[in-house]
Image (cartoon, rainbow, N blue to C red; front, side, top):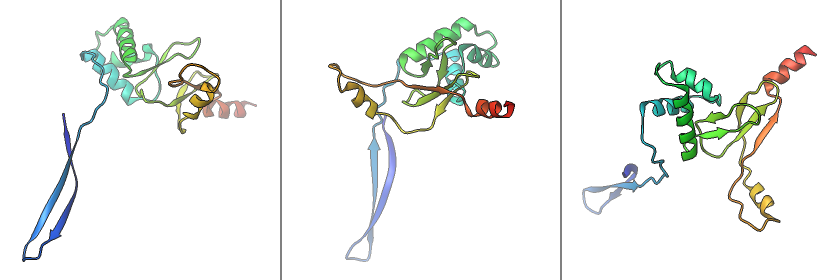
Length: 166
């Protein structure tokens, strides 16, 4: 479906006693790969919650939160919908090694920090590392299409707490 945006107008003065107003309208077709997942009330509630938080919740946290608005939702339904949304590319599934998977409502390329002390997962505000694809592909006969990278260590809160306890 096209979306029209008025991008500018220009007034031309003629040689007579009138002027001509030209309104420039550009029609832009937005093309986005849209997943073909059928909507459901439960799935929409899960997606809405994930879009509203940056906490990278576990499935259990998503379940507890969504259950406030849909009391009869089951944990199995939450898991199935999270897996379906992740497989379709609508959300990210973050496998944090040894702990429960976390979910991110922002499927765009970005990086995460994993705190080894408290288990918190947070977004890192930083530029992209696209050049790492070139480095990885330098001595590789195949084609590098992308990468996933997690950074880990001690989050600011835990670092502060550790300094206060020393």
